Image (cartoon, helix red, strand yellow):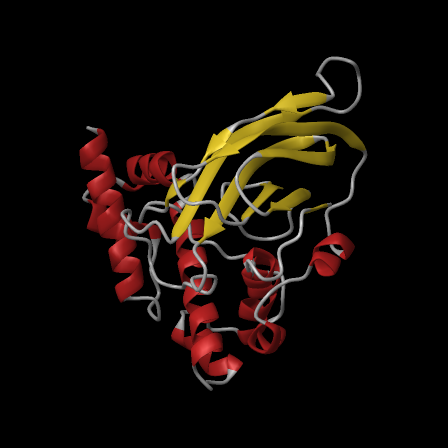
Length: 258
């Protein structure tokens, strides 16, 4: 049954890529999957970690990143090309997911540690999350952060950048439900924008969670253990939206934590 569900989800994701500029409803996606609307939404989230609508939004924003980096199209034209009727809505969602406005992303191409530190989510610090990031692949820089959804996008509540897989520590974690997401990319692939194939080791990811951190009432340990293992990204993995190019460049990585 899982194979049937994954094939259905892959059909829907392929259809998303082919029709980014068109309105796509849940009903449309359910028809492509050949499931009822309610069953489709449930199983799609099970295999991808995101709702169908959230996944579609991520695919659109990844394509917008590619167009901003590789063409001279205006922000308005790009927003329409990826399915937004309002450039204001597009700019707002792009900024909150990628970490930079469309115009700044076109110029800078990457967030900075200073930007992530200045815009991090606020809240009482209650826990430290420690663990080990392992990988069967050659050693290369790794970003690891905590996010409210199972997608590497938006502002991490805590993050670190390692020069290679190994022990990590995420300090000052506020109360909430967080997904630990780690990513590494091969040199020269920091700006990869296309859909993952599943057999391409140039883009790797690992996920763990949700991890629940409760407010400091003594009912939950202040130190939480979370180990993850990197693997090649698959088509069912949500696109990486946060602009990490400079943070993951081997020439610029230094161990850092926030």
